[in-house]
Length: 123
Image (cartoon, rainbow, N blue to C red; front, side, top):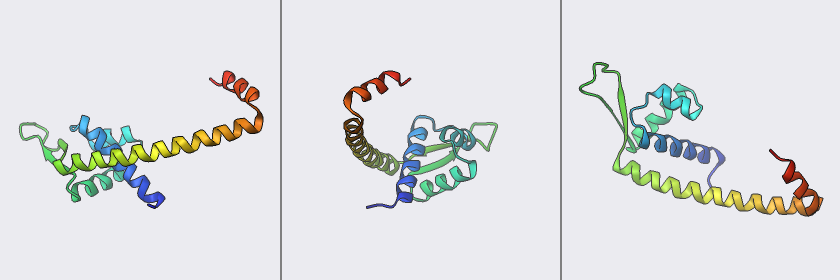
């Protein structure tokens, strides 16, 4: 069983790689904003992904702004993203199944009629 911290890190890498796959030319600030994290935290995660060989960074050679970079998933990064997606989906399905069991238990506790009334009141 992986630790909670490892799951959070894996989820963060999954989200970063997913966004970069669709938007490789985002700045670190734009990417950090999309992820709801600090630029420093994102920089740390990006460097980890680069060190692992999952992401490569290159600048636009024809750009006037030589500080503009593009972040590309490497073939190894694409394979890792597929593996992360599979693990993420498996974990979310397990959470969903556990939540369904918990909901059924709560419905049984309060009674199905009362649970149906609560569902109708929900926004």
